[in-house]
Amino acid sequence: MLSAYVESLKLRIGVFIGMAAVLGYLATLRRAPSPGELALLFVTVVAAAAGAGALNHYLDRDLDRLMRRTAGRPLAAGRARARVLRASALVRPDPHFSVARIVQ
Image (cartoon, rainbow, N blue to C red; front, side):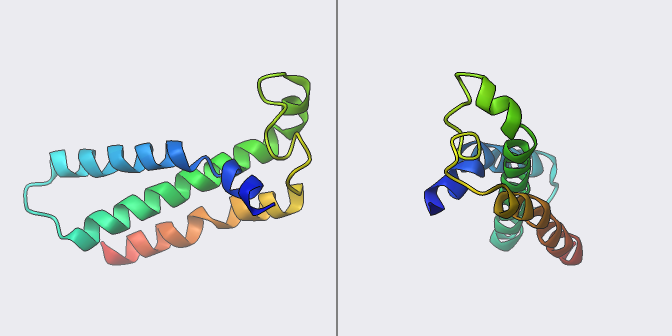
């Protein structure tokens, strides 16, 4: 059951988005960044992307049941509960953005 929720976070895509954010940050920075800055940026972006992925699964759950390509997604297939996924999607990004703002 936990794997259904992890699948809805679309972590593979989130990791690539996080890597792109770190590379973009490195390309525009005029000084050497600290490893902590890069790690915080990466984790924050991956968490935000995960929240967006979960929200996408939640909002599209009815349409996903109708399309063959998406019928196997966790909510459409009944492997995850909408209430839990919605809470995960809506809560996940905000604390990370707050932490990133405090560190800047």
